[in-house]
Length: 201
Image (tube, rainbow, N blue to C red; front, top):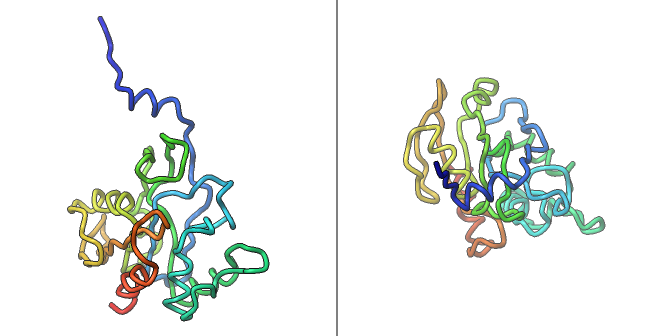
């Protein structure tokens, strides 16, 4: 008997399994939960926290929304994001941070979601069981949105259009936002305008 294995399956099995390096960051009374897919490889980190790549615009978007300054969360002297300032902002605004993949394989050995195989997805229901004050879930890219849409049993919503849904016993508003990666073809001011809608709502 002959067994045929797809090239994609062989490629997947040859790649090492990576587990998420950090726990979720959830301030007391968190209202918002931001979910990316998975951190880049450690050599791209400017800090051991979410969106650590210095060329990712997530923290510049947050700086513009809450402080009217794209570099408010950037430490120019050290050329990295200011983790202490970031956590202070998250605590003040009741924003939790986590990702949708707990274990992955990088099929192309890079940070692209397109070549990221999610082996173990987030247990969103379990997280919300522990933090029931979260009422708004924000996904920062198509792959992350797909994971949450699958767990909620809904179609992937369009960017910028909130959807009411539930996972387990928890109802929440799901916002799909554009990726803050520089690879995503959208100007920074337009990304800021999209993310601002979450907090205006």
